[in-house]
Length: 449
Image 1 (cartoon, rainbow, N blue to C red):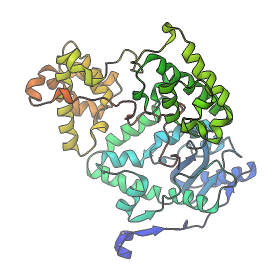
Image 2 (cartoon, one colour):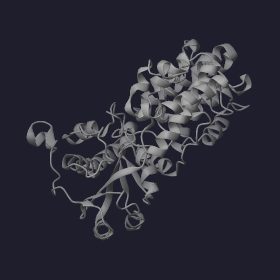
Image 3 (cartoon, rainbow, N blue to C red):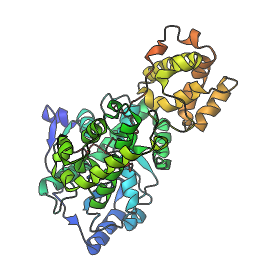
Image 4 (cartoon, rainbow, N blue to C red):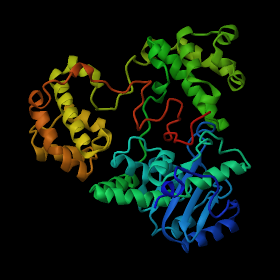
């Protein structure tokens, strides 16, 4: 019987069942906690809290673990920055994380690299849940309510307040229970193998390469039309990033994107002109006024050949933005429309999001430059080269091959003019936000207030 059946409604989780454990802040306490985790049984629930809305980068400021027979462990990775002992103690344990791709990089930085994974968010997507936030899944699947009011807290502040520690402990309280329930549903839907392959892909994923022009992700950059204006954006963004890195502050706390864009449109040359832009009035921004003015001056003085192009930021050797295909290559636009239509239909039949069946980038690349022979084996080989998993290839290779070889027959009513790629203000699911320094995407607990 579920908790909701027992209580006649959703049951709020207010206190950890074993009480709030002390934070591990010394090597002796870490050794004791490591031994306790090693003596536990079964999977280990893992979570990490970052502070990307406040600090530069994506480092962990609290790590939570819970395992049957071990209880909950809260570790301060600032005081105990080496968790390689925990990693060794949990070598054989499956790690249960929610949205694992967000936490695994910062956990790896401090020495924890699990070999087996169950990602509850990804499992929820494969099962077709329309909303897969941790609190939502816990409520819908288990009948418990998790308070998420501290998701925007500054986890870098010390000492951490008791209510934050309680919130963090509760995040791993029922994570293993959620894992077990979702695993059962995956088995019922015949998706256990799909999930296994997806989890392995998450563990094997390499860090995304640095963007060649990360400043082009500045929010609102579409309002800057000239090359010299883009040079101002580039110089201010680079200056802000250097200041933020040295001060260990989120770039947006040093200078907002809106200020960069406004400066790129008005070219402030002195104090009076700069302070007319509201974004430069903040305490952090005022400290660096001379540097902002110097950055604008460099852009104004740049020779024409040094100015950035008005278009840029595309993936090297990749296809152009899809909304231009109808004009540049109508046949490719038809292929993409037809391939999208069949993949959408397959995803609907399989009760999962389209992007989890086949990534949009893979579909664009395949449609723009299909194999010379668009039969199922050739398309399957191409999909594998783009990183598609075997289960994805099995479902999509045949139908996509038909769509590419005969797009009008497969999607006669497709509107190729509606093709659209994410723009500067519409980042894709794997893109870092505009103020992120390129070290990973902020997670649900890392957005600024």
